[in-house]
Length: 388
Image 1 (tube, rainbow, N blue to C red):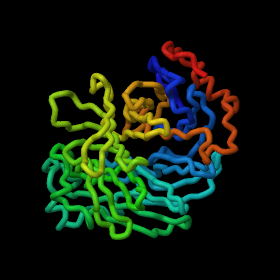
Image 2 (cartoon, rainbow, N blue to C red; image 1 turned 90 degrees about the vertical axis):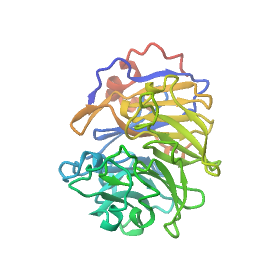
Image 3 (spheres, rainbow, N blue to C red; image 1 turned 30 degrees about the vertical axis):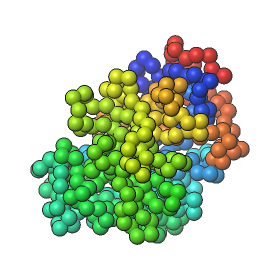
Image 4 (cartoon, rainbow, N blue to C red; image 1 turned 60 degrees about the horizontal axis):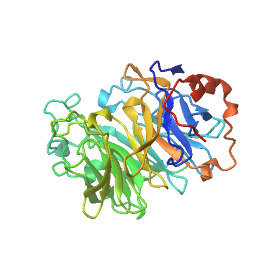
């Protein structure tokens, strides 16, 4: 565990009158998962045996569901585009004791706990490459960028507590390689590059697809694609979620935009009936907010949105009008693809009355050493209004 050596770390801004109070869960590319309060004090720390291989979640019983990276992409003989790889699902109790484990080869990016106790996750095809008759029809991507002359495929799995697969979906069996064509500037290493999963109110599965620049809804019953969102409007997005009003919230990373401006990221809300963007957040000078990879977004009960600027190790909260009301800069340094970084996966805000936190000891005094090193008292941030 090491600390970043840049000026602003921890909570750098907070407007206590406009935030949606709660506790924020996140991890960086080291072996720890952190839960912080709105002042940036650490209230829980999970020590894990692995670097994260996906986002993590608190379960209703307060346990942590975590995906770990068993081997790096280099050790598995995979290209750098497939570096977001896990391989094992782990459940820890509040005190970091392991209570459940499942081996999930080629798992990557996202995991989703289900109400029935099962886990939904996606992986690269364990048998590797796309079938030849699909690969030859695949449109888009830069010619000659296949990995060792081949294209890898994606799939989604649902497993029970015994690790048995109870549902499975292969992208190549349900997507059209011409309709769901890759971005022309994308490498042809992986298609369609699933990077997030969400269970919709109707029981179907919402997926974000990086390579074709879209999100899709898949029928849980048939596996058919029943809707597509954002085509021609987003580029290489992540973390597609269905909101309570039925709209789709999505982190639009913004790489390869067909604009004269430099690349920039934004968060968009899409009306599924019209496929039109009805709300967006971007920086006043758009390139000031840009995460080329990962990224996350979450609509809060008061209408604010928590955004994870993954590349820069930044979590921030904005109002519906786009006003910044809270910002946290991660002080934690990890390592990925040979570089030291404060980069993180995503962040999730839990309200104090969340079932996951019911009866839990959230006293910051339990972690004196961690808070001396990484809490707000260790940082000289001069722009925080009086808090609480």
